Length: 205
Image 1 (cartoon, rainbow, N blue to C red):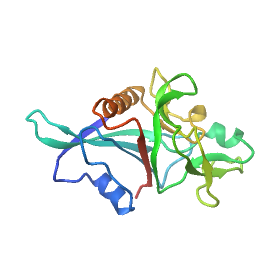
Image 2: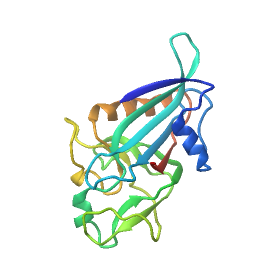
Image 3: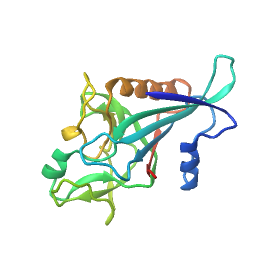
Image 4: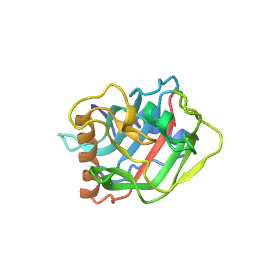
């Protein structure tokens, strides 16, 4: 992951974009995570060409309060396999812009490993049912009560294509980046900032 730091008085640009959409940001306490997915408006199907940001406050080495911003490659779209072979009602694509307030918790993704899982509140998705190789946004919005998670692709290497890894989830491309992401999620809990996580998804410029 790429990490940048900013003085406390300088709001990171990605958080300013969240505010511009009328969504909340979390600025109290340390490791109170702002998790933001940014969908590439010129994205290509089946590629990890979106970005995920994790932004929070912490102390630097001189004990000054700073903003820490992590950035990694991900996909916010379903992979090609599910676009062509998903349910008849259509494969899910998380609607943007949307803030999924307190919808996530640390839990087992498909019973296999700990990830950030949508278990606590519903989110809205579009459904792409035409079985082609293009992700369709827009139209009717559907409510999904669980399963639109944030997890990794391969455990062992950085994949180049999404394929079966996403049926609507946000999937982090690099397993090392995902490990950092999960450590930050645990730090939120350890610092008394709660077990509920909010995920905001925006469309990039």
